[in-house]
Length: 95
Image 1 (cartoon, helix red, strand yellow):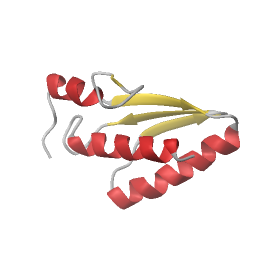
Image 2: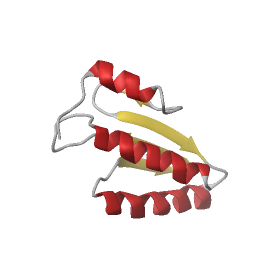
Image 3: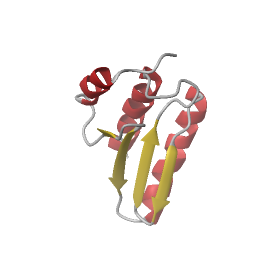
Image 4: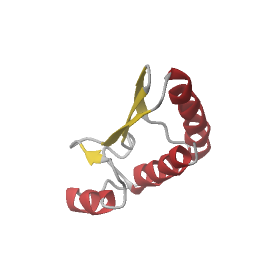
């Protein structure tokens, strides 16, 4: 899979609320009521990541979940990252 250029990435980000391009990845932070809700969301996301064969760089501190997506094999951001980001958005919206 070929990395997207910055223009393509910025255009694709228009469809994702709260995500930003960091120069290396697309990233966002979600805030939940407490640790349990954050961890529950991470678990749901983890199953989907495994199904897609694509895994985020992420961090969880109490009620916050930070997610960064890039396709390491491609050396940048690809459509695969945007597909997973849209999936994550759907999972979070359904919580």
